[in-house]
Length: 310
Picture 1 (spheres, rainbow, N blue to C red):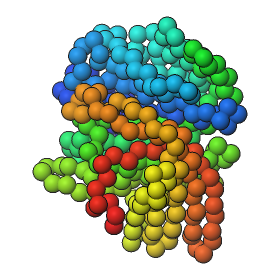
Picture 2: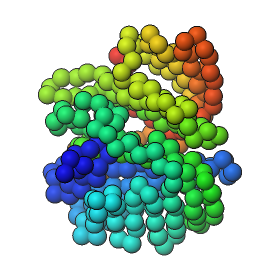
Picture 3: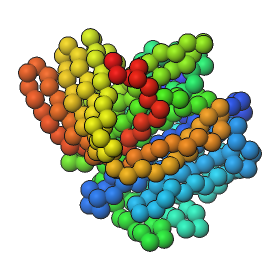
């Protein structure tokens, strides 16, 4: 009974006014040195014939956006499966078949996050936030095939992750990074900092985790936190995250950008400047020990105000 209230659960609120629910699946292939992004969900303020959507970002191509009528959307909430037309999307597998793209992927060694805590902690109990976030898999192995005009990729135990958002709109101002170490499935990093509007007030909150060697460090729970974000130049973004017990120096080579569509007031109508192939160098200092590693991931920095420099 309580399972449906978990942050990672499938909501399936198709009749809710001005509402969206969307999933973000990233796959990175070390063999092909290529990133694949699959975004899917529904937006209730869209017209009935563009109610469901799948956005695809494939190597060497501009993003592709496919819409599906409301009457072609089905849910299996118990197994977390969403069906749009002939396409089947879940936490365990994805099957997409359009006239020009065929995707069949399976995920294994999923590190499912089922708890109420997830990425936002007690913030899940705040009603009517513009946007909620949770992580379904911080990292998993991906195998299968992706075929499209000009490209065919066979994937065997490549790295991926799956997260989701739901609510009415993405924050007006936010900073988001999700990265994995393609050489080590035990390492992943999520960091997001956003300006939240709620009950007529504005406040800044951050969420995220550093998972390393089977240990998860919840970045929300660290004490005496100081976060600084800096533009080194047009290509590099720096984050300095300091607490009493942990210091992170994160250098992000943001790479090329693409424009994806995001939600505003329950409609998929906002342009999102997205970087799918960011290279992230991380230096971690804890208990006077220094560890460094390089990651790959996705990055967005949208209208971040001066208040982010704290």
